[in-house]
Image 1 (spheres, rainbow, N blue to C red):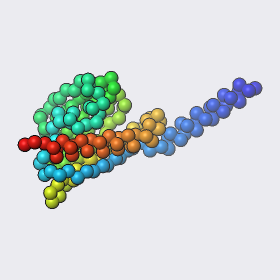
Image 2 (cartoon, one colour):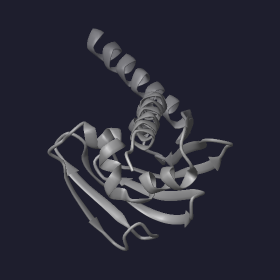
Image 3 (spheres, rainbow, N blue to C red):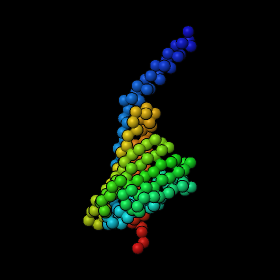
Image 4 (tube, rainbow, N blue to C red):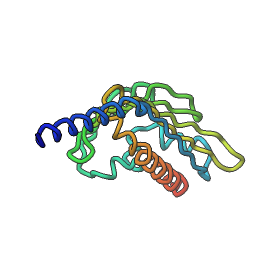
Length: 177
């Protein structure tokens, strides 16, 4: 008798977890910004070349042994970076749209995490600086486990983006010419 009650309670809990997961958000959108004391063309140069992302991207700093390859046109629509690593997994970033010194739009496919996202970096020239606004959005679909992961993902990705922005600021402002 006790065994059947335990099974029924376990079934009810599992059912409630699954039901709750269906109502969790399936999309994320994060946006961070930073003011960089440099003209827009200097900031743009740091973001349009995917090879430079290794210098400021937090993901690449997590594993210095990651294998990173590049293909497609250099600093243009279609340029792609692919990575493979035991720590950061496998994935790719591809530039999908550009507006010279104003905007970069890219798509991310994180094969390990099963996350596909779109990002945008907008540059807004100020009097003596440039405001860099970085946003990322994506959808995890119907996968309930991924929806639960999303509860913590916004915080984690938001921190990664903010650190990336701070790294870009440091890189651009300290560049010797």
